[in-house]
Every structure is written in C-alpha cells, then in structure tokens.
Image: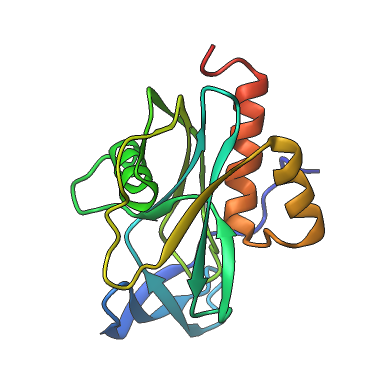
Length: 189
C-alpha cells in the first residue's frame, strides 16, 4: 500500500568537508542508517534555488532561447532561467531572468511548480513560472558567460521540438508542461 511507509530518514552525523565551485558547493556528509546497520558517506551538491520561466506573448506564442551549454557541449533550446539571488523572491528572479536573457517584460508572473532537480545528490529547488503578456521591451542584459538568442514558437512547435528531441532538457520540459497546464486551467485570462 502507498500509505504504509517503512523507509525512515537517515540521520546526518558528520561532514568531512565542503568544496566551493563558485555556482555550487559539494559537501561530503556522513549519515547513519536508522536501523543502526552502519554509517555511510554521501556527496551532496549545495546550490541556491533556480527558476525557469515560460514567457507567453499576448498572441499565445512561447518565447524560447538558444544558448550553448558546456555540460552537453551543444546549443540547447530552453526557456529563460537562472539562479535565485540571496534574499530574492523566486517570482522576482523569474521576471528578472526573463528581462536579462530576452529583453522581454510581462504583465504577470505566476508560479506553476516547485521541483527538486535531483534529490539523490542535490538539496535545492527549481521554481517554475509562466510569464503572461510577454513582449519585447529592449535588449537583453547578458552576463559575460552568456550568449543567448531568443525566438518565439507556437505551442504546437514547442510540442514538436520536445517530441523530436530538439528540446531535451528535463527541467525545461517540466516548466513547459506546467505552464501549458496552467494556461489550459485559465491562468492569465
């Protein structure tokens, strides 16, 4: 049965150290099994929370971005997003990232979800939003490490890009699906 839980949380009993890599830290933590059968080390990635925002124009098109990603060594199709600054509300981060990466502004930013990117090794959350009424309002304000191009697509084109693998970033696909569902439920009307 789904309501019978036998697995219990493990207790953190120590830490061997933390290494800082600018955008995240890696902790080497020690956990004790709740049944007393030993202590084990785990590496945990410590990062600030992230945001992904799906901008939708007044005409109903989705604003996507293309940018090169070092991890895949490819140009990826994604939605605007980034890190939540210390003390910043994720909704504000979403509006900020939209403007910085695309030059678009919007009428309304609505939360659509909160996900754990990979709970096996990470503690942070990804907050997803839809930006209703997105429209160009000036040039993007890119960081030195960013090279981004924005473009608009219909939802049918977005779906086709997901099916073909042109959009293959799992967190972006989640954000797109959450936004699509929120719009179908009447967000922004």
